[in-house]
Image 1 (cartoon, rainbow, N blue to C red):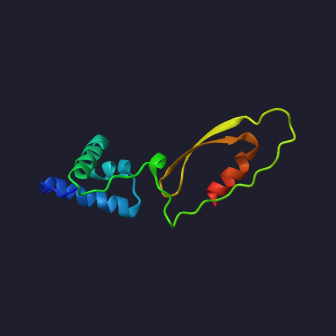
Image 2 (spheres, rainbow, N blue to C red):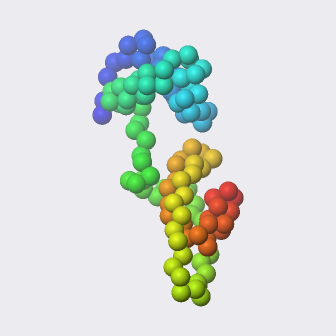
Length: 118
């Protein structure tokens, strides 16, 4: 995708969005800092992506494992109970802002939470 010319306003918001991403700041915080509505920030981001100035973010469902990512193995145990271990839906956000959704057996919740917090 080629970079289309930007208006002065788009160039301003491109700089703001790039700085926000570099600092790990949220879009909500940027909107508050600039005293504008959050939907305006998302509209500028969308427009700048369409013009080729911002790279779209990959979603977790289609993300390809990068070489620098690390996977933490959570040890499993064999259940001696005849009652199935109920799954708990876990929705959390990593320190880098990446959302994580998973279903965890109740007996493994503590180990999964420990792995996520390390």
